[in-house]
Amino acid sequence: MNKTKLEEKCRLLIEYLETANYSKNYVRRFKNGIQYILENAFSDDIQCYTDIYQKYEQTESKVWKLKEKRLVIKALEALDLQRKYPDGSRNKIPIAPKNSYHFLNSEYKAVVDYYAQTEENRVSESTIYGNKAIASSIFLKLQQSGIECLTDATEEKILALFIEPDGKIERHYSCTSKFAKVLTVCVQAFPDCAALLAFLPAFK
Image (cartoon, rainbow, N blue to C red):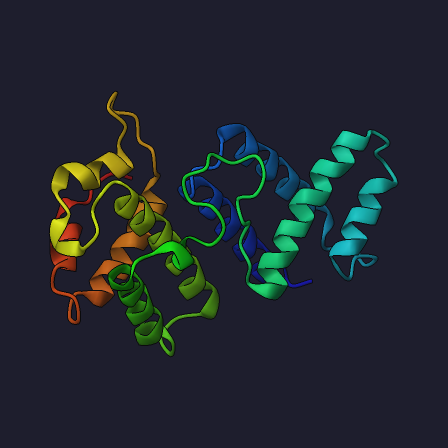
């Protein structure tokens, strides 16, 4: 297995879970599972994801722990081999179920599509897919809050997606910067993206 590629997939998976509002406990379980994978995926006897799970079976007898590791391994395998992110069917706050992109209206889909097409020959496929997933999740939350088009977005609505009323940061810097990247690429075709960029919080 390619270490650099696997580490990138792990990073994208965790960022997606955090951006799509999975529970903190659920994300923590994935982080623990991913840590095990990264520590054990590069020995000579590991050739695929099934090998990783079978190796874990040799040292763990508790059924619930086996199920937890299998969930993480299967999710990572789906992202790596099929480019599929978790569909939100289990253990998730029901804000952005399944693939957020498919629930977007035509305007938001057009923005995301333009980004993907423009960056196709500039950056890696995994980067495009990760940024597209994050942007789709954020656009879906905007849409669900009543903002049906770019021109309707206000600074208050945008900030509410990233900062909770008590001042706690809801989305970390990495997710914000990826969304900003999508908006920056799309400004030429969708000038109203510039306003959304201006509304984004500046934190790291």
